[in-house]
Amino acid sequence: MKFIIDNWQLIAVAIGSAAMLFWPQIKGAAGGTLTATGAVQLMNREKAVVIDVSEPEEFALGHMNNAKNVPFSQLEDKLAGQVKNKELPLILVCTSGARSNRAVAVAKKLGFNNVQALAGGLKSWQEANLPLEKA
Image (cartoon, rainbow, N blue to C red; front, side, top):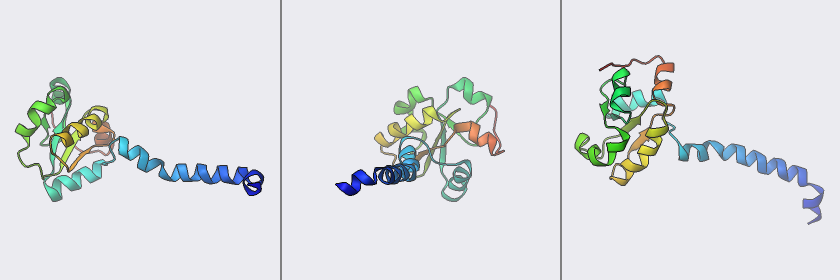
């Protein structure tokens, strides 16, 4: 006990360091961690399907190439109709990444196990200078 009392500052630093080491895993569990480069690799190597969960008006302004639009509000009803093979990787995207992160849980509930959200959404896609299609 004397050691803990005498070295409380060192123990606090050790706990803080451990927290900083684990922060990326904690943050990643809550949000999308798929980078734009990782998404391109999934699309090219594993034939990933891209589902844009934005509203149709947002989708029309610009979206990833070959993306299918299934608005978040309709995802539970329409996703299975858009993607028949539940084993294919699924990339969910929206403008900022917020809706697509929530959509991951919906897709997993529907039986899609290989599903990821694009971190940062279309903003990160554009920042990586990757092309957008317009409807």
